[in-house]
Amino acid sequence: MCQPGRTGQFCDQNIGDCVDKCKNGGTCHDLLDDFYCTCPIGFEGRYCEINRECSSKPCQNKGIGHEITGGYLCECPNGFIGQNCELTIDLCQANPRQNGEYCQHTLYPGDIQCHCPLGWSGR
Image (tube, rainbow, N blue to C red; front, side):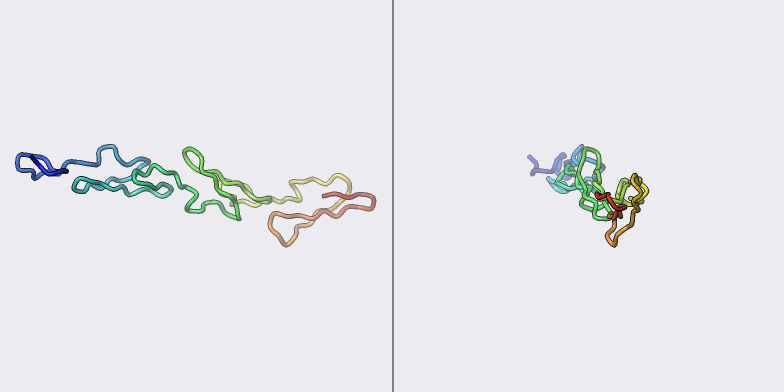
């Protein structure tokens, strides 16, 4: 009778503990009667089963990351678009003028200020 994790006529062979253990592209490392997984970026847990793609903070410009099945989604603040909120948009051009007002960018990224003609107000 062999000790746990060993097999063979002389108990000199390690039982492979790595068969189908690590998920999501993780690499299994066989130990004596045990194993551990090295997980790719974005995954963690004993079996690399926990999706943590936002842990690397891929969302730029103060975007908020949300874990979704198979990846992540960035919620971008005003003035930014793209998979990682990496692209800026011109909010003045994206919000066309209607009543003769003019648009001006403020010191805060993603913010604009509209100057209305007399008799008009709003944003």
